[in-house]
Amino acid sequence: MSTRSIRRSDDDSDADSPELTAVQAALAAEHAAVYGYGVLGGRLDGKRGAEARAAHDAHRARRDALARTARDLGGRPVASDAAYALPFAVPDGPAAVRLAAVLEDRIAGAYADLVRATEGARREDAAGALREAAVRSARWRGGNVAFPGLAERAAGADPAATGPVEAAGADGTR
Image (cartoon, rainbow, N blue to C red):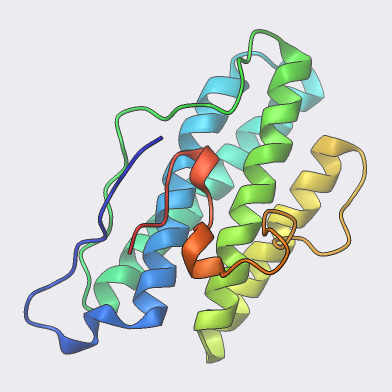
């Protein structure tokens, strides 16, 4: 897994805010999702391939928006890694579909953290991203989970300690 530190501007005292930390974690998760969809997209065709391309484009757009938000908050957007360790091998279409569901579940966890750390328009945007990830996950899986974004959390665990998307390639190190 990737270990990264979240870089910040030295001249901004607000750069250690929980909001910036959550934005950076969501950005790291989006970097991992973009990578993951790049891997799985080549193993799907037809309708599923089109869904993967649409999800890839959506994650790229969210990634770019989060990078802007990190800069607006006084941080330096966390960079993507050159590659990410996948949670399992993806040799064929069924494995690619499983990976897509896993990626969306983990993205939902990052956005659940972002919803908690933000207010106003940023919270609305994060809630929308959480909803989109939950819908995509349900489509890939063929079913849904009771609390999207929380399934990755161990019972009683501190979300700051577990990090939002370890297995998707970002460890949430603050």
